Length: 202
Length: 83
Image (cartoon, rainbow over all chains, first blue to last red; front, side):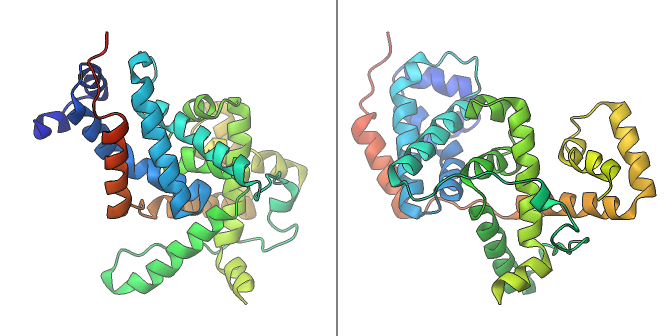
């Protein structure tokens, strides 16, 4: 049964769930649980909050799955619920005010180096310490993005949603998705670049 | 940064994402050929995006997965067929 479901399409799984098959629920969680947890962790930066976001997303999704008509992809629908759960979490905490990133501050040469040295990601097993340090550096840089930029970046560049899908998930215009994504990437380049890191670390 | 460089700088992400018209892409590519700082800027941005994508996805820890399973079973598991 389980193996059969592994090959099932998302819409088949939704259909099976509506028919009352709980194993369809397990398969949906297996398929999207880690990605939603990862998204929650990147957005909320706390393990407990990521757990809450994942749990709230699935609870809400399965409660309302009867109303899911399949015009939207299941994955997009789940992320839409998760994005809302992250926003709710942040509003409750009131500890991370959103802010704008100014394009002028991100122009190379205005206030920083003209050329950015971006480190390489090595898959060599002996480089695991370098990789761990780099991973930490990238995660810190993403965490330092203002929340609304962080969400666009995570949906577009980490989860691989298109501009249109991100706009639909977040309920903002495609132009705003493009603007925020560009600034988020420029911010990350500055934060990840070798010099930026060295200076920040000292 | 010159006005011309700035004009292209603002659209670099759209260029990398293939969201511009072929004419605009050609225009940008012609500029990049003549402007090494802009070319370096595009390359470093491209590298930043690729690097961020390499970071592996965090899996749910086992205890979190177990609690999720239990909550879903308690709240949803006794699902009756719809309709």
